Image (cartoon, rainbow, N blue to C red; front, side, top):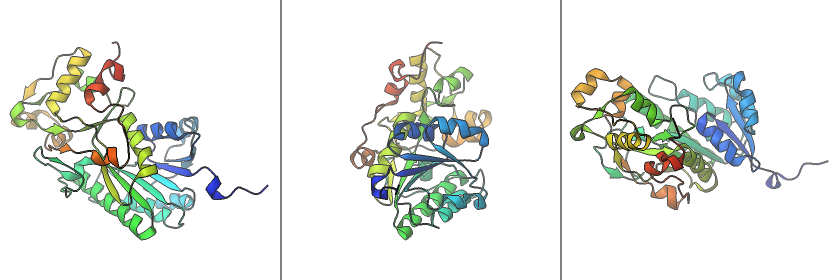
Length: 305
């Protein structure tokens, strides 16, 4: 029996970097798309199948394992992080080279980071602000963004870049502010504090889906909620909602002596994000527009115990 024309079949989505957010996307699209998920680990095959995806073994650090990706998918959701060192992202380069071998892909959504802006001294801005990465971690993301947007222009693919801030959710590994509160990790005092940005993992998954359907070509979108809070205010709110002591305040000088380089890096950049493209262009209505709603017992983050 002949196959129906491709226009009548379910579209095929390849998810690259199918961690927590990728699995949430699979659950949203199950039954509506044919789903593929790239993984480096055979141990993850059962979980990906259970989520409704056909798992594919491959490794972005080993480009020869990616040859089979050419021609498999109509759309790609790229959520895989860059390597841990260097100023470029060879993983994204390898993925795009594999996809370019066949012209089937028409849509690509890339999950980047708001860290590409560096420190904005608390400024409020939209996606037209120039990037100014201050770390190699952010430079790798800038490199990846440039590569996917060039791929879109060169190959006629609609590319959306989602710049993502801090992700939280009750059922997300490491997604509990409570864990940090229980450790008593300090925050900066008011005069040294920074603005941070957040998105609930469920809303981020929905943003990924919205970008697949409605993202404009070669467009950057802030995948961030409406909250405009300093880091200390965020953890104060979390502490109040789950009945824990508020975190201690320290000066920036004390933080440099007590905290890890990774923790310090997040305390060294301050910005507030305008998210109108998320709402107007992707037409996404956030389920958790503020962290207060997402952190509340009704939002599911803080249950008993």
